[in-house]
Image 1 (cartoon, one colour):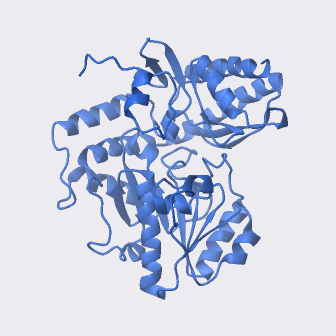
Image 2 (cartoon, rainbow, N blue to C red):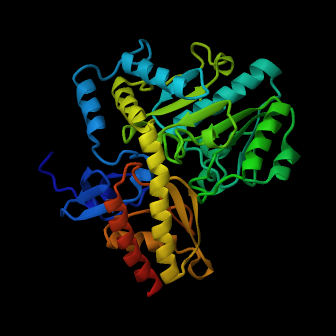
Length: 404
């Protein structure tokens, strides 16, 4: 099998066509650099969509994987294991939470969160308290429940009847939320910084008011921190900078530093509704995943790394402002920490993908967040040299698009 020629054409032959990957096939990575099959070097400003929080092949993560790989790979939740318990203890100690549920992905973490919110409301307030309110342009995963809670109908349409009693309002629109919230509401679900929806930060007063409304109506506040969590905004979790504590928080992506793992965090009182047998995951709490995630969590949850995120944000903002001063294509650069978005101005509407493709031509990996936002979600420990070189490549890509 190792002798088989692996090309982009093989994807079209053997893979379900729900993705349309780039022609480039990376084969090796180190830090914020990646090499393809032809040994061309790319700078990675995408981070596997905010996953590779310590870059590629970070020695601490490689060591943790090798060490655990020689010990124990899988048990299932018929038994517990040491890496899962160590990681859970550290997450509880570092956050508001008392209890953790492990799974494989952000979608699964959110699925668990939404099921728990419904179960808790029904347990404590009766069968009518099932309304979930979320926000337009929000994104919470690709299971049918989570994609329906997500506020982008293009992702949830076309699969038949959707899970019911889910409503959406505009992000940062307090009056709209007040208008549909009642004692029937079991949960309000929000990202503390919308990622897929366009790198949109919440107003500080809005977040506090959402918390107050939830308290007034005995509804749970669920923070989806799949993209913002584990250092991405310069805090361990974004809620820590907002002055608001959620009832349930979901984490994934950067939690494993590239190894698939998700987690749902909550309080003792709320967790009690997930009694034995009410929810589960075959791979959740897998020893390999938890060992790598523990190493990533320990590495990120330090003043050096978290303060370094804020420093790196300033490198990006200064560099992007300098590029924009020359080429006048961005309306603004928004976001927080190392989750940043360049919003295209009227002249370049709907052309974010053109900037992404031009960046690939210049051997730079970036992301988009909708048709009008170029998104950056690099390693939290990317070096100054890599940022400078990557921004030089981005400037060449911008020039390609602007100059036609």
